[in-house]
Amino acid sequence: MEIEFFLTLAYLTARYGFQPLKQAIAGGQNDYPLGLFYTGQDMESGPRLIYDWFKENVVDIEQMVVVDIHTGLGPFGYDSLLVPHDADEEDEFYTQYLDDHVEFIHDASGTAYIAKGNFDSYFKKLYPNSHVRTLTQEFGTIKPTLVLKALREENYFFNHVSDLPRTHWSKINLKNAFYPDSDSWKESIISRGEKVFFDCIQYLQDR
Image (cartoon, rainbow, N blue to C red):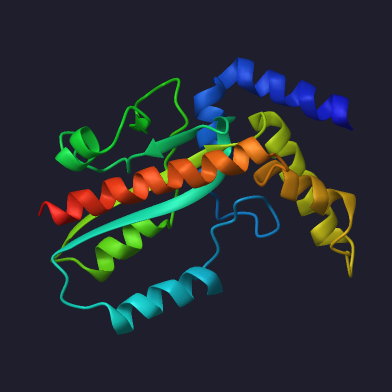
């Protein structure tokens, strides 16, 4: 099974290229409810709680910065600052307040991809008259092929085995794929998270 997986992945990469294949997989799909990255028909409960809280408690704002933190793609412990595909690349927030970790969607060798239904679109709809800047801070973990392998395995067992325990090897592997048991990786998360947070605060204070 593992050999077949890696051979198929190698064939598809050779045929379509790594970036298009990554976009096709990570960008989301709404055709197969039991498949990976199914976008669904409605907002998930977690994002819904966040969205509703902002809708009820945060009103009449002029400036806003949203940082959506992810793990899984990119070099181990390195954070890529992914700019939304429809953002103004000349915007000073991206060009002057953030460092060289910034990536635009057209960076062929980068980590960026276009995702459906992310926080970027929701907050811009929620505050249409405000200046909203959004950013995804993506921390790399293991090789993308191994991340995909862990996702497929856990997805299979989740959908086909009832009462799957949390200690099942597929769940442990999936957790390790997105949250490595490494002190250096965790330190990078904290230090770089603080760096980007205060860069965003500085941008807002200068408005």
